Length: 107
Length: 114
Image (tube, rainbow over all chains, first blue to last red; front, side, top):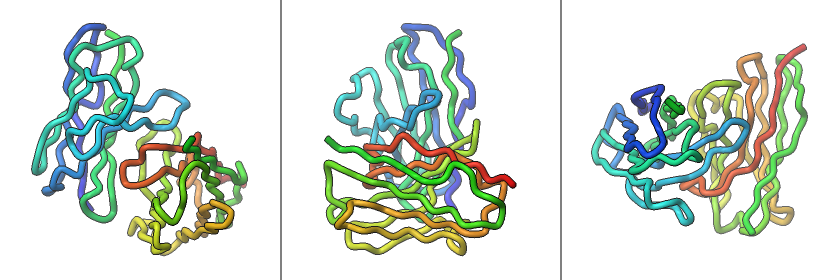
């Protein structure tokens, strides 16, 4: 199984900050990498698919990049509604697997 | 609009079988896949398996021996059955659409306890 390792697991930041969340796969996943945001008590929400494609309705402050085994989610200017937990997800190889999550909290 | 909604028992006894239904609207099961994803309380997400638009299935190897996913296209429903439940199967169970997972149900909490 492909292991997805996210870092950091906890990130404290302030409104207006630029933040990056990293996701490292145990093998090449050919850019088949999605990012989700989850708030407490809610289902995950798709932000980015296939590394760098912004889902419809998601603000442009969210962006994704990467290739091979290393991927990054960037929020250019953090807004109050961005706090929550972020998960990466690979759908290149079976079984599809999620990263362990990065909790983004208010500093 | 696209919607998915999970339903099923909130409490299952250990060693018993879990049966969940995902009822979808706003899209066709013959054109889209549906996956099941679960999340133990306070923990991360686990992809369980998928049923494809053509009706074939794929499962997480860790669950494959216990898990079955099927569907009734006439009712726009996808079914999950998992046997030999243990306490570690306590989780919120979600159904979600496609390979992007662009739409999700609200989830159903399942507790495995005697």
